Image (tube, rainbow, N blue to C red):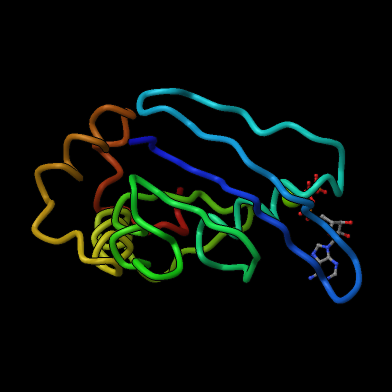
Length: 132
Ligand SMILES: Nc1ncnc2c1ncn2[C@@H]1O[C@H](COP(=O)(O)OP(=O)(O)OP(=O)(O)O)[C@@H](O)[C@H]1O
Ligand SMILES: [Mg+2]
């Protein structure tokens, strides 16, 4: 099983073809950069993987179809958006707990603590996100 499977993915905005029959796989444990000039379709593809865009073709995350098995696909997927996308009234801990809980990752305080420590932000865990 691949971590990510992109099969014959196309995306049109009206009559404009942004993605034209894209196929590739990503192995578990691989780090992959998606490079392209402005307007190449990077955001369109990532939005399709993340279930934000409609598209033609099939995409699987850890074997889960992002359309028919959306909750399990999202359970295995993290997306850091380009824009700020957190509630400015929550703390760092509340933000991580809320966002992971949206797709069923619960009771994960130990994991949140570990991740925050790994990125040297332990002293900010109870800070309001606006203060970062
Ligand atoms: N909502 C939309 N409606 C119409 N056209 C769109 C829409 N979103 C993207 N496009 C067009 O689709 C193409 C791919 O855009 P996309 O944003 O996916 O590219 P990108 O590689 O992420 O670009 P950038 O490097 O600027 O972030 C571009 O020609 C863009 O103008
Ligand atoms: Mg983009």
